[in-house]
Figure (tube, rainbow, N blue to C red):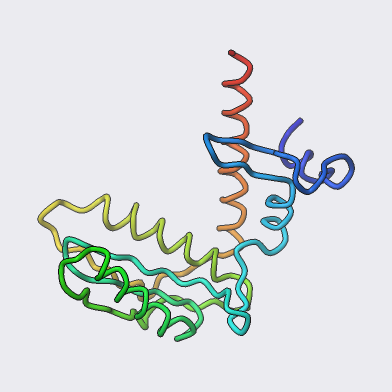
Length: 171
């Protein structure tokens, strides 16, 4: 049965904790899929669950902070940078709060923004650069499609599910 059809009928026969996909030591449950379809990777800044991205370059000694909800996690990111400095044991990391980070338009997209920003920085910037080339870590003028990001995450999950089924069928 195609994943999309199966996902529509999750409530009919699956319990929230029933495994939908298992990959090594990661288990994805019906409850996870339901959360992704509605409002997965959400924030609640007042409740302390707002997500922002702190990308640390140990080689350059810099921590880049991307916050899609203004300065919601500024202090937490500075504190995390100080702790990372201690863990790395090579002097203080320079903290850069990137104020040109694209901003979310609602209170439920911060986790999606973190995933999309990280993928963009990794795939489009860091992994595509020459070793000697300087890489811009600015996200100025980057447009974020959070709905498209959610759909892409579901497609990735579905492809892993299909791959898992294919591998199990050969065992």
